[in-house]
Image (cartoon, rainbow, N blue to C red; front, side, top):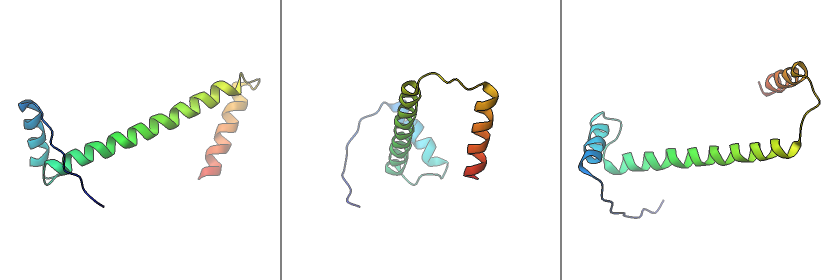
Length: 83
């Protein structure tokens, strides 16, 4: 994958934090840490977008005439079908 060089400026307190994260051994350098942050942010944004779609679908579906017991049975059936 092609790489692009970026220059960023962060306060000393954030630089100290980054150095601490690298010091844990989980990251080899600043770039690995920042790439991990970006990956996590991308995943979070994708999950948030999917949640918004699900909320919109729920709103558009209208009110249910099913009882709570019916809904629970339906959810349990869906879960057991996924496993």
